[in-house]
Length: 239
Image (cartoon, rainbow, N blue to C red; front, side, top):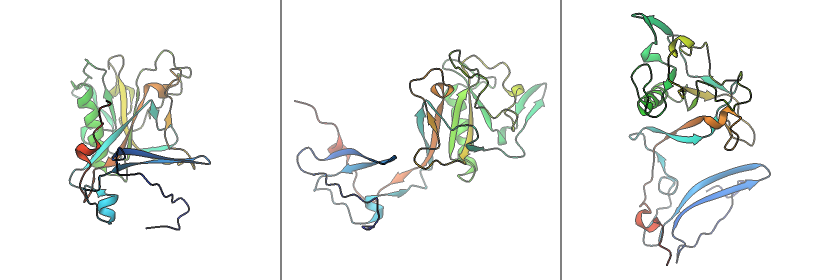
């Protein structure tokens, strides 16, 4: 549809024999890179020549979900925290706790443990993700989950990527959390690199705090006005 675009490339994937299936088409050119998922359907499954059929569109009924990116952080100074003026860590009935409706920083306990609010790992993470969903993409498009207690092997322990002092991200609201607890908070990137993603990865360096962290990118549900690949894309047994 845009044949004169400078980044258009014609790729022919045969649909006969073993050509049917799921592919990831990767592009790398002078430092620029990208990829796209492609389902190649058999000729028996007709796909109309429309954008909604070939490329799909947001499924607003399904709602947003999150893509997990391990060993990942959005770096400090490169994002705006999803926080409001009503977010605070307050003393209530003799203990410190956040204003639940406007909570910004969530303690995520390790497997088999509960945080100070009685939540397990999945319950606490879901609350953090739901908070990001509720404020919309104007304020939250991603999540950082970083260690509350700096791991022993990390070199620069003073460079902790937790927004301490903002909203309810205060020590009082995290006192007594078990060892291995993570801090989850929503954000929106403010720094975009020309040829790289706005997050950092450290997949093989335990001296870096990023190695122990996880990012979640918010993504909208996606649907197609076309048949799905289904069993035709299932891996074939090797004979």
